[in-house]
Image 1 (cartoon, rainbow, N blue to C red):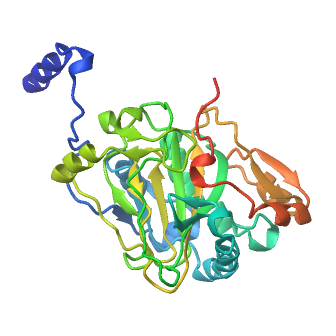
Image 2: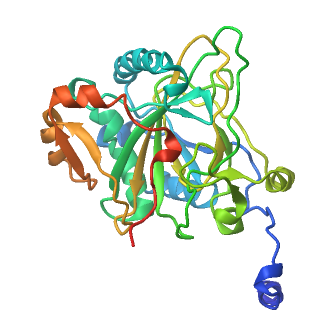
Image 3: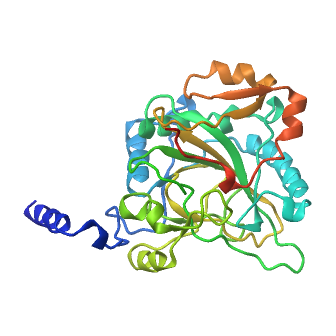
Amino acid sequence: MALSRAFSRSRLQLPMRTVPIRCMSSSLSTSTLPMTIKPTTKELSAGFLGERNLEKAMRGLHEDGLVVVSDVIPHEHLDRLNKKMVQDARTLQAKGKDMPYNYNVGNIQQDPPPVKEHFEPSIFLNPIANQITTGMLGPRPKWTFCSGNSAMPPEAGAQPQRQPVHADSDFAHPSHPFALVVNVPLIKFTPENGSTETWLGTHTGKLSGLQVQEGAKGTRASGRIREDLLDQRRQVRGSSQPVIEKGSIVIRDLRLWHAGMPNTTDEVRVMLAMIHFAPWYRNPMRLELSEDLKDKIQSQTDLQIPVDWVSRDEALKRYLNRGFGNSYDFGQAE
């Protein structure tokens, strides 16, 4: 306790402008691999985690900024959606430089089809995912973003490219948790097919904020982490490309450093990304969904879901005409 007080006093004596950014660990762990929770058969049947596993999820998010929950989505549900989204990814890729790519053309921003036949509640309204985001953010988080990232196999003659390490929070934001990304891999993720590179523990303190980033907000190059800070952080706690089993969900703090990696296989690798914001966070975005989903959306009570309803035909015309990832505004209204 005495050491802690002495350290605090010495930090307070420094003028604010002279305090360096130090990439110290924000938790006791130095492991580069995320915590993985395997629900029990009883928890899967009930659709919620028991106290011990829920505590593990909270600890993983607080300390690491990311947690994996395995075996919570039936594979057949993922297979049906993956078949459609792989077809859509090829359609987007055919647009060339006009496709909504993120940093490089090997990573495409891609929405899932927002219509009833492709909407599985086990994927988009997963009760265990909702339980975890509620535990961190408060009752009935706001779901205002539903998209995905597809790592494309390299085209003939093209060199596979990685993304720069970046944070999705390329704007002034609170220093406490306010947004969680629910990622759903549609197939098994491996380093070979572009499993996301993650930098655990970089979501809090002086590692989080505009002072660690480069690039103008809203551009494809925004949110990049400064190279000098990456070098410092590697000495404390490096990055990893974890293997994520099919059927898992990955919940990530929006502020965490990460990077999309090249897909060196011949199979498109799709990962859904749904953002749950804290109920007090005033993000103005809204989902655009087909009217044939009204019953499913309006009957659920876990989340607040602001929606612009359109006809099924209109939804199918529009969902592949979205922007690239950094064109979305995840900020908060005044």
